[in-house]
Image (tube, rainbow, N blue to C red; front, side, top):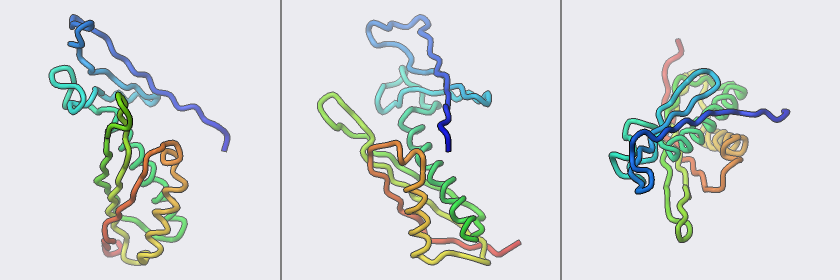
Length: 163
């Protein structure tokens, strides 16, 4: 696969706040090539209100969502190739932000908790499910781009009857 450039436009403006004293909004907008705009901000856990926005995505959440989303899409494709039919996939993922050195913070661990519902006509056993998650992690573009540990704690398999 040849290289591909992905783009995002991040837009912030300072309007009437006191920038020099750190009293300014961290609210900004992420714009993507398909026309999607996402309100973004520093996390209120990092920058106190009112200088952050609780109803916006923060970079740490976006990072976590990117890891989880990439794992899911890779897993779905691998499962499909192995003949499994997935009815639903959800993940209650977590990222741990910690001090990694004086004056430096970083996400040190991502935990994925996928809950997958398979159609009843074919379901993987626990060994196969574990193999699919391992391969998805190994092949995930985002996981291959980060330094922190990424742990997958899959929920038990759920089944639905075929349609």
